[in-house]
Image (cartoon, rainbow, N blue to C red):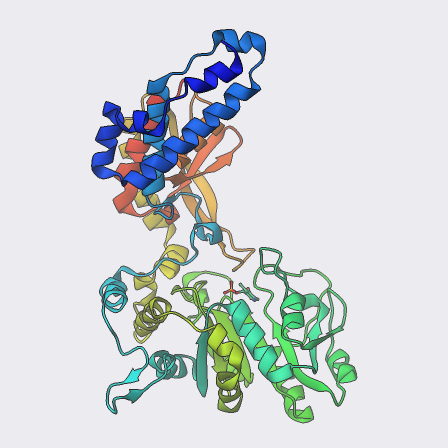
Amino acid sequence: MNGINMLSTLPSIDEMLCRESIKELLVETPRNVVVREIRSAISDLRKRILKLNEEEKENFSINLDKISNQVITRSIKFTNMNLKKVINATGVVLHTNLGRALLSNEIKEEVWDIASSYSTLEMDIATGKRGSRYDHVVELLKFITGAEDALVVNNNAAAVLLTLSTMAKNREVIVSRGELVEIGGSFRIPDVMEQSNAKLVEIGATNKTHLKDYVNAVTDNTAALLKVHTSNYKIVGFTDEVSLKELVKLGREINKPVIEDLGSGVLIDLRKYGITYEPTVQESVQAGVDVITFSGDKLLGASQAGIIVGKKCYIDKMKKNPLTRALRVDKLTMVALEATLRLYLNMDDVVSKIPTLRMITESTKSITRRSEILFGMIKQGSGRLTINMTDDFSRVGGGSLPLEKLPTKVIVISSSNISTTKLEEGLRNYKIPIITRIQGNKIIMDVRTIDEKDYKVICEALDTVAHSIRR
Ligand SMILES: *Cc1c(COP(=O)(O)O)cnc(C)c1O
């Protein structure tokens, strides 16, 4: 058959719709979705036919069952949620690609209530007048951090942008060369500053900046001194930086505000749990920093947000900046943030209630106990897989505490007849994707970031994957 004749044998959309398997599919799947996939399958086939050479044409035939199967698979995939739960077995607690901080189980009801009902988002119930969506968290943030006032925007990058645009537009901001952070997704502090129309004045060297460098850079056009917490890297060795206290003292002397981008925004002292010192928001407030910005979904453990706390005079100006409207947060962000901040009212058990903090501070003893349970469950049905358990380290991730290595236990999986990449791929493509680490020719599952309620799914996935892959 020649190519043109072959094209005339392609099925029509109606013909496909009449096939038994497609009719079955149509019981649950919207017709327009199925038609879309049939159209695309026929179009793919047409393109393929036109590319065939003479010899290939001889051997080519149209297989309607195969087309139907493709339509079914793709229609189901298209109707299923694309954004879905995964199991994070990487041990990276704040995994940016997997959604960073997890919300606490404790706030489930509050979040769903506000998401599915009308709410007091912008109404002051006492007076019946229009209220502000920020007011729900302002008192909480003031109480927890000790600051005079607060404002919330979409993320910390937006918080830095709004702060600089309000306080330093067309003026100079002095920042140390050791603090010109890139925060991921090739997003850099100097670029944010450029967008805010603040003029960056870099001082010092990468490893050392002295107080006199700041002093020498001050001009009539200086708007502020900026300190950026190098939360995602550390400069070690022959180094020197100006402490927050010294910087605030200088700011007072020259009558210029000090702004600090804290990044991670931790609200508790993690040293109590054996973790490296990470400056808290409260300490910066206490040191007298005028404006502090930090993330809601890093070490704070709430929704994605940029939190700004500091002196009322500056926050008031920010509220009037039109950018604030463009960067404003949704009610879902707000309810998750408010409910999470309320957990901080009881500092004694906040660590056990906020998943991010709980995972970071989980004791080796507890992790060992949990890994032994998972290890036992997997081992029983492991079949063709070799399962071991060993010591390893987890990471905090999300650009927080970059040097911290948290001792953990991991399940090590290997197979003599399934390649590691196939195994990893199989687990990643399971109905609830399981994201693992490959180390050498083994799969590593770190129990720190795995919830006990997911152990069964992991066992099922390993069983399914081990049996469905041939070499
Ligand atoms: C993470 C980080 C940011 C960006 O915060 P997002 O909430 O991701 O926008 C900015 N500055 C520093 C120092 C950070 O660590």
